[in-house]
Image 1 (cartoon, rainbow, N blue to C red):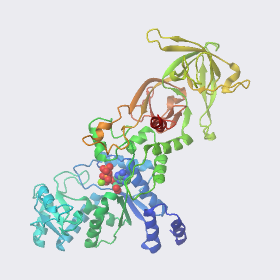
Image 2: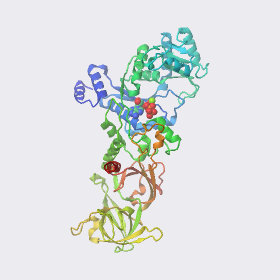
Image 3: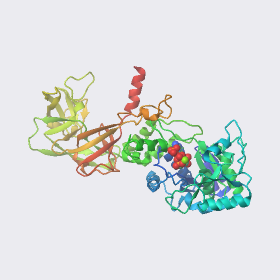
Image 4: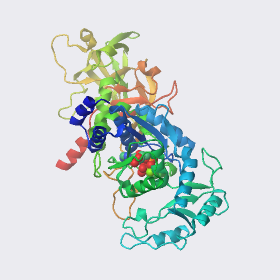
Length: 571
Ligand code: ATP
Ligand code: MG
């Protein structure tokens, strides 16, 4: 990046992290380098909070002609799986970011980490401790009380080195020994009270197999991995603020070539859901949702299956900005971003979710005609398509009322409406199902002079409704989703209750035998449709098959939720 570019950037840094980056470029702290990383632990699927971190790290690299690595922080073989590695890589790609040839693993550095650990032992800065987990905790002290030195703290360098090598060779039981940094048991910062660097774990690692019997702890592995990769700005969330002195201590003691700067920002939270892999995993394990990619899950895999677009997620992350204090983003804001994007790109179609049969009594019996329908009024390039029209149609059950309430402009006996892209039709009668008392079918006449839905003589109709031709319609299943939780912040609920007590029982509604316009026969996952007047939909990537289509509703057309809430507030 040239000095002029840096200058012009410096006029508009969007947030405090970019401000730091700009300052560092100006002062030449890292030369002209900007190098970030996204460091997921492969112990679950990525969620929308991770998208925030991905957008930030890759975004900064892109803006400042830098680089961003994808690095798996795979230091805990007990919880990590290849399935997660694969899903994480796929999700980052899907979001639209590219790590090029820089996909790394902390496990790539196990040898380096081990060597640096020996160096620290040789410097007298690390020791083998025989306290068990419980004792270590007791010796550590509390926020108000200093810790106590471990009785093993003053072992000789030779003994420490010998024990560490034997730990590595697998001579000792799990939990019987640890390697600890020798810092300060009375530090006001608990993270500095001789933190554990290595523990014994006799678990196979998904990449290194059974080579290692000892594994580095996160705090030790993370800073060293950053330094090895030449990261300049190590961006993480606020809970690591108190770990920063430790991050710096390790790198100062090891004297690595690079010493990245750790910068913390506030986690992204979303209303009506939880964003913690532990909780999301619990939802899956307890079968409260189908899977990690259940379209109700706030995971990127779930959002993808639901029909959310990468662009709308990126836009939202951008607009939310970077905060120093925790806050909650309203899910309505994310939905707004989805609608904004889909309105531009989604193909309009007609689908009747809750069908009611209509016979056009004055339409020729065995005739069908093809009418022109616009694919996307927002995008002329999307063109038009043909929609078949015939004597028997389906409309939405809701679009007919025997006794219309005031202000109802759709069909009722004697009323005329426009069938979208087709004709004006007037209701002339209806039949009731004798057993249920429900309307079983209705009858209309059409005005042949109103073809295309245009008024033939200037007469106006107030309602326009969608429809499909009965003979041509394809059957499909449609899944309607609502918020997974029924409270704004399921992480903060009444005492004695858990977030699991607040799952919305109506988060999924399945409609069978919906009637879809025939152009949807070849619909495939990954394409967004608008079902006119119903919302945005997409083919379900898992359950939909040719001949038995399943659609997911991505989002409604308008924010019905906000409207309902306003209503309940004012009533
Ligand atoms: P979780 O709390 O969901 O288990 P985690 O922090 O343990 O998340 P990691 O795999 O360690 O998950 O996270 C990878 C990166 O994503 C880290 O840099 C972490 O700070 C960041 N990250 C995780 N959750 C959020 C969030 N809600 N908002 C912003 N960044 C996040
Ligand atoms: Mg973590």
